[in-house]
Image (cartoon, rainbow, N blue to C red; front, side, top):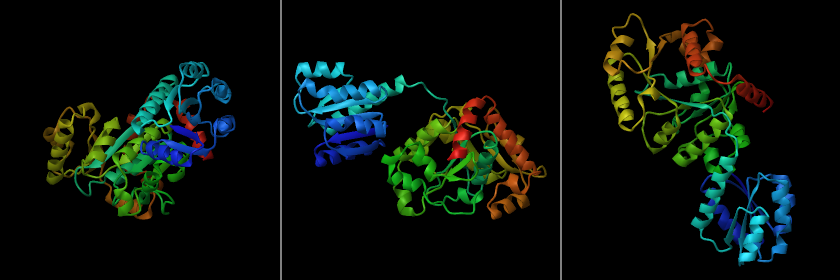
Length: 386
C-alpha cells in the first residue's frame, strides 16, 4: 500500500517509517502540517495519508475534507495530541477513517493501517489474478531451469509472464534466455522493499521479450541471505496482479521461503529424470508435499528427457509415484537443448521444429485455455510501452 506521512516532527516521521516499511508498505514522508495535504494528495495519489500534529479544533479539518472529497480513494488517518468527542465526530464527517493519539504505540499504528488496508481492498473491484506455477527439481540436473525458462517463452506468445529465479545463491535462469547481466535483481527489491510497487518490479526485471520478464536471482551471497519469505511473498502477490503468469524457478530445499511461495502456487511441478535415483527422490518430495497439506490436484510432476528406448518410461514412473497425478512428459533432445542453453536463447529460437518445443507449447496451452484474452491484451500493450 502506498502511504504518505505528513508531520512537523522529523524524528516522529522516521519512527513511523521504520514501523511501516518492515511490513512492505511503500512510504513517502513530508515535513510540515495539514495545510500541505491537498498539494501532496494531488502529486502522490496515495492509498493512505497519515497526518501528524493535528489539534482538537474542528476548524482545522478544512484541508482534510478537501482531500477526502476530491480524492475519495485516498484514506486519511489523523494523529492528534488531544481528541475531544466533538473533534472525533467532525473528523468522521470529514471522511477521516481513523484518529489515533500522536504517541500511538507501533502495534496500534500497524493495526489501524491494517484495518484501513482491508477496507480499501474490499472496496476495490478484484482484477483477474495471474496463475503462479512453481517448478522444482527432485534431483540436481533434472532440467527444471530449462523447463521454467522455455515454458515461460511458450506462454509469452499469448500472455504476460514474469519468471522469478528463486535459486537464490546459484540461480542462472536469465542466462538461458538472455546474454546480458541484470542491472537489478531480486536482492535489490529485498533491500528496498518499501519501494515495492508495479513500476519498481517492472524496472528490476529484465525484458527478454515484450511479454516475458525475468527477475534474476541476487548477485551475491550477502544479498541472497537478505531475502526473506515475507519479501518473496509480497513480490509474488504483486506480480500476480500485473502478469498473467508468474513462474517460479525454485531450488530443491523446502525451507520457509520455499513453503511460503508454494502456498501461493496453483501448480506445483516437481521435475525428475527417468532414472531410479531421480524417481526415489521424487517419491520423497511428493510425500513431503502431501504431508504438508498440498492438495493432489495442485501437484503436476514433469518427467523430463524421456527416451523411448529407455527401460524407464512414464508408465513405470506412474506405477511408482501415482496413477492419479496429472503428468507432463518432455522428450529427450540433448543436442538441441544444450545448443540453446550454450547460446543463451530459447529452444524455440534455435530449433523451432524440435519435438520439445511442440511439447512445451502444448503444456502452455493446458495451463491457459480459459484466460481472458482482453486482460492479456491490455497487459501486453502496457508491457510493450514499458
